[in-house]
Length: 401
Image (cartoon, rainbow, N blue to C red; front, top):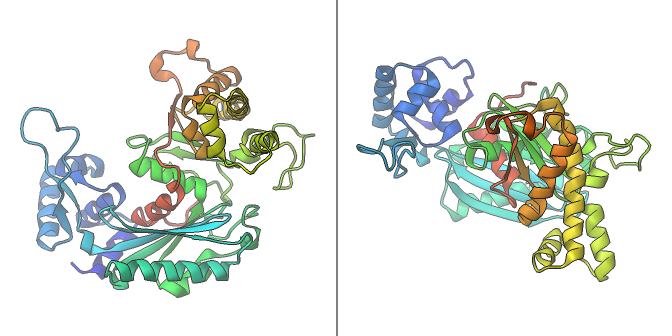
């Protein structure tokens, strides 16, 4: 099977043949055993066995060194794990951030091949981003002796709502020069490959679901606390986008209709009180020097009571907004993401307590298995760009959810 055939199998959303189903499952999930493939696909074990034999003979599927964790430590021989052949194709993920662009190159077995970051001036244009991303991709492929003929697609994460119908950026307040941009028109001519685009928080949720703290969970909320507030809602293993791409924009829920003006144009948004930006400003005024969120966390861990108070205040404000989300969605799992998660229980414990105060269903109302659990995200520096890679591996099509 050649790369052109692999691309067509990944692009075919009708599920079609058993071969297409197996290839797409391995692309979306990474290494799986034959038993897992049968369970997830609903195909008969004999059909899976025959299909895998054909795919292994053609070199598209190979055995991996990874053992099935469900069998490790148990009786009998560990199940053989299978993945798409790393040589079968590559994909690119890119993050369009406020002051930086990140690029990751991965293969279809989910292995990261290269990662590069370029610092940018604020309000850089789509054309400038295209030049930087093209240069970073060329560098990565050259350094690792890869052929661009194996490139299956490019995923792009951006800090703003993305209309799932046409891929246009909506009201991009973090990167305002991108508002109204059709990302496919920017990058399509450069790569001549499918271009996939989504909000950075949606991509972060995808990364946590595929490789991180939400592995094995198909229903959860991602809540990101950084110098802004973001989020995503995952239901049935799919990130909800909303009809115009505005789903999960938790930072722009109006908490106080008469409150201060937000950068989005509304008043009293959650981001104004629950992001760490105003608390960082207080810390900088106190110490009379520039600081990062990590600096404040380090000082809090070293026992500075003022810095600890700032983190607690941020968590309590965030828990207020998260309590509203909990009342509406009542999720089984909340993955807390963003740089503030580095604070660990200094942030998570008051966040849980504030959530408990402000949400409808209290822990005492239900048994432990029916309570919302909080876990820190596994990725901090690169969750969104990893999720952009995931857009390609899952071959996400534009379709509102």
